[in-house]
Image 1 (cartoon, rainbow, N blue to C red):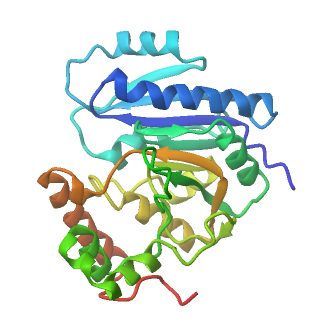
Image 2: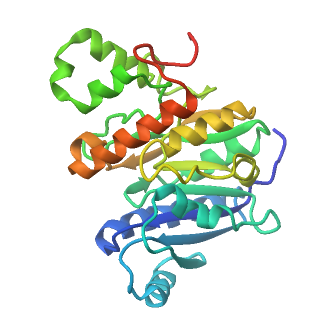
Length: 289
């Protein structure tokens, strides 16, 4: 494989509520996975940027010092109050990075736990393919160990309704639609190229990719910003890859299991997504495959 030198990594971690019990498991697993990638010769340096968009008045300087004592790689806290959304918060970092300093960027949630060899697997996949856009890990539920099915096909109004309203899930034909949306017709332990949509909980790509797509569309406050950036990347010729050998455990849930304000953000972002990329009432996927 050609060595594209994705060896200098920037990590963007957006935090809305600063609770050590929630953040530190993610950082512990991140540190271990980064260390393994360094030992494997796939990574030279890594910098963690904690983008804090929670309540104003938090002592960011002290938080940064605490993290620096705990985390074995350079750490910087970037305050972005008031909260203007997930995509805009990540863009604070994405728009400031220089190719002179970094080759790749990992955007991750604070509620993930990364298996030790995951970053090595992803960096190896990314560094060997100049057309690779986002490289997505296998996502597992931490409690059950089951696949979360983070990669998706292009959604339809029908499949989103099934996922939001549980009473619709009693109908087998609607569940089959959701199965197709979640790529359940895949062999989940095979590498797949040409993934349509990747989950925003863990997105690794070269800095060239992030600069080419311009980062996230900041008009999405929450939800669908990951689908939007996936599609914009594909339209510009990037190929997204699913790498099942890289395992990440994600404890987050969908909007249907969260407070009502999340449903409002979900519906608003879904409307914007369909207006930007095209409405689909029933069939999922952008092409028959």
